Image (cartoon, rainbow, N blue to C red; front, side):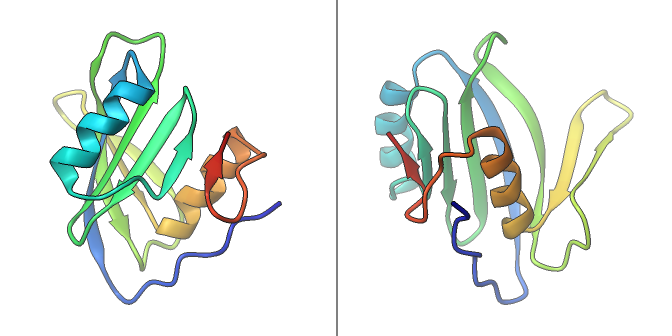
Length: 117
């Protein structure tokens, strides 16, 4: 089931992604830090918050906890792209709807309210 597209006016949000060990504990902590609940929550695996200026995601992975990548959520991004800068840092560039499509591809059971039990 496809999620509802995100209605976006022209906007850019800085994106940062982290690897975490415990989604549930991290969601509680990040809710407090960001002052809101996640827009998308895939229990035990993934969470995504959007604020006025930030797009923050956490994911339970085999990686050590910490920084994964950065980028821009850009309402005018024609396609989702990824590049690596001279320091080896991965940068992504995408629209909110492109990001949601990627989430749905990874977790097809994400439903319209964007929460998966």
